[in-house]
Image (cartoon, rainbow, N blue to C red; front, side, top):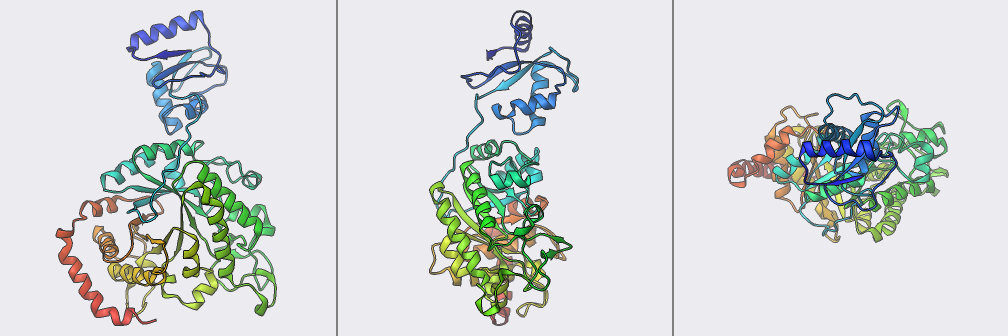
Length: 462
């Protein structure tokens, strides 16, 4: 039964009472043509809870989480607490008769993205709304959500066969990712989704024949005490990740961002079966070929395709390329955006003449961007770095630490920025962005440039 606004609370209660007497409503009745600001009256059956009822109707409402909808139902139905009884009538605020379908908002690949990372736990609660509001207030316009994280779990229920087989979507943090995307789109936020590729403990455990194996023992490769990596050379692994990426694109995301698009940083790996060294396919060939396939299959969706790479790859060291498989010039042919992870504290000193890299954020970010620009000058790809918004490894982490990184990006050919905090703690970042004023900070910028000039002859050495 549908009731159109406007009604004051007393009239609404009287109408609900009238309906309860004359026209009992089954919980299975669905509206065929639901207009905006419409109510449905639900008759409680035995064994139902407010949470269960809210979960049932959530896709047809404007609320993002079950707890949001529970509070709305309480307010509309005059309920205090969580106790409900059979045959009790609850008022449900509906706005549609089918779940929302978000649509990709195409953008130029060099648009000025200013964003943050939002993990699967923040996506599941009110925090994502608070972060979105703070981002907008701070001049940002981009959020990168978790689609598939380092556990191998998906943030949403999946229809991909292999995902269902291994239970990758069995613990979703949101049952309606498209609604969250649509919510962020209404705030004019560019929505990207991070997809961790070849570090996948869940897939490695459930399908051990796909796990990356030790060259020395032939057993699944152990990383930090557990099996974590799957083999990028395996067609099944590649097919699975491309299927997940296409599923995400169909949900209306604006950007697919591949993370862990690499091999682990060890030589003890059977990347190409047991072939002799001289016949073994280089790791970068597997990684590049995968990206080329993904580019082709995602092309119809008009999403931006971006990749995360190690910041150290800017130094083009043969050992790093051989181990990770990340050859930047090759990868740049098959993506729209490259996002090097330039976290100063992760460059362990002494590095290229800098005794304490973690204490020199401007120097590290600017020089890394300069080197990446050299790789990309013949490419159409956009350089959009991740920068450090977390305290790990930095002796003094404050808003100036973030500002120095932002200034370095402003003095480089990079376009836009992404702030990384694994736990989504951005309080210091908001303070930094509030101070982002070129005039106020010009003196510090000049000082940083002088330090760069003094050290450049060492930093630029290979």
